[in-house]
Image 1 (tube, rainbow, N blue to C red):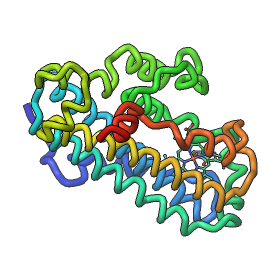
Image 2: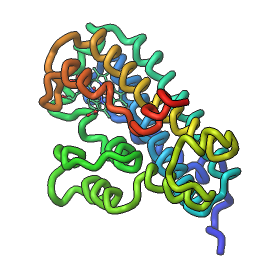
Image 3: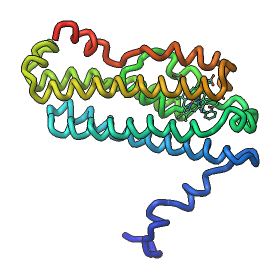
Image 4: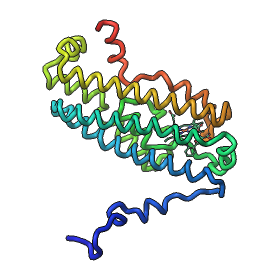
Length: 241
Ligand code: HEM
Ligand SMILES: N[C@@H](CC(=O)c1ccccc1NC=O)C(=O)O
């Protein structure tokens, strides 16, 4: 059944809602960019979660072709979100300082979708939902994601469907679809580390060693998250390849 009004570009894309959702708290020129960038991020995080769920389903079904295509899309989106940091880096420290106090205690710590991404990609410690109140819907999604298999577990199921017992050396020796999937997982791992690195550099150049609005030490805390690979086994196997 269709609605009364004809579908339009504006109604299909719900632009009245999307374009009414930028609400700066100051009159500072740069606050609009700060809001738009974060909203774009959250939309891409949503798309990444959507693609990763499909990827896990395809892996578990042993569908190499679709898994590779989906991984390629995920990697392309990841490249775009890393590149977006360039735009925010056109904002100078004093421009950010001009509205930073208006952010109160809000912080990237509260991006439930980013945390959910980490959990889908394998994060399992309780720190993943530390900044979320008990009844927070974001916290519920993070906890639910923890109860589902991680991408690594889906990859292990995939290897079984392809006749491998988990021996990565055999996967790489065959150099077929499963090895391509494994290499794309390395790309994904490297890509997320790249995002963390670019984010820290952005933070260092914008707020120096100031503490974060979310209560952490800021850049120092972020540097401590830099070398946490998603799939350590895929890095370790390289010594034998
Ligand atoms: C001027 C730009 C930015 C600054 C100065 C900045 C600063 C910070 C700081 C200091 C933290 C540590 C938490 C805290 O104590 O507040 C943090 C965490 C975080 N930020 Fe940003 N940020 C910026 C832009 C962004 C953007 C564009 C995103 C994209 C969504 C983002 C996402 C995150 C996430 C997900 C965390 C949590 C990271 C983790 O715990 O591993 N930030 N940010
Ligand atoms: N944590 C940042 C503030 C910040 O960047 C931020 C604040 C609100 C919403 C998103 C943010 N971006 C990422 O951390 C700071 O300490 O300046």
